[in-house]
Length: 456
Image 1 (cartoon, rainbow, N blue to C red):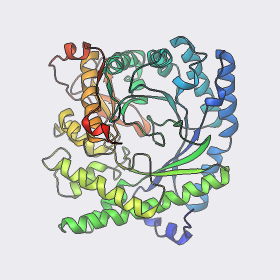
Image 2 (cartoon, rainbow, N blue to C red):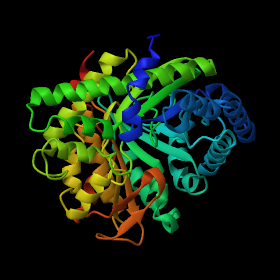
Image 3 (cartoon, rainbow, N blue to C red):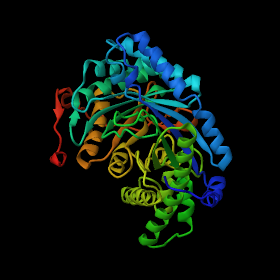
């Protein structure tokens, strides 16, 4: 374990007070494979009991650390073993999985966490009956729970893309949107589709506890877009060399704060420390925007020519600075570009500077992908699947994590606004191409792995 002097934390006081530096989440990963059972009720009871026992002190510990060190810890979360695996023995139908979803949600409420992730299936090579049942249960599960988050990994560089799952996810997203239409289709904000999903991600909605992880583990996500922007304000007009060094140094400082919190939380809870995820995760608050960092580099707004290059530079330097600060950097670590959660991205989408096509290009170099994007409510399931397929292809070919969190807001169209509240923010509805891709999406089978996937 790396020793961190408390003086290093004191040096960040200005960042915390003036620049929106925070620890975005302490996430406790809990393995649930030992809860498997052939009876649904017994399964749900075991899952509830294990979560409420193991996570009993998580929220109190996070608050204690935050007060002691003066570091805001915004969220306390739980990730669990993908539910399709845990429920395979007992859950034979989508309705069975909904019972498991409700048990997970009750447990999360009991221990007081903000979100619980892991209502998930990993189907890069194809779907088992349990995988398909869970996926088909998602619309009801997310409409009848409050803090449960769901993810489905449909592709990877090693496996290719399961297009049957991609087609199904387009339908599931549409149905989830309808099931939560009274709240601007917010259920879709808790559902993400992945390529190359990582099993130590502490951020929602895509967090799950991978089967290669220990039974319990603490992963921490740190965020500081405002800190990076403020640092860049001091070097306006400087060379790219100076720009890169400034970002790296700032990322180093931020990561050290995360390392301290992660180490403390793990020690106090008596569980292993996993990783620090240094992701620049914005919020709707002014001064906490990745888009504003890009503007500070010299763009008039996100989406201007040069945006993808600026984002690539930012993402790379954040990773380099973080890796120097901790031997346990993991998760996604880089820059997120969620439209609804970043006031600069929101403004650029409203002005028309950001289109879904430009956002897709940016995802080739950012940490994740098409994130929190509100689209017209009448977008067909096939076109949603087409957007997902495009995003998965970027991840597969480039060997990186990509994701799609798309929200077809039922009853709203281009020019309207969707309101999600809290960290989820709000978003303008942006247009989607009307061109049809249904014949492509209707094909069955898989897109095979690329030649780069044969490395061994």
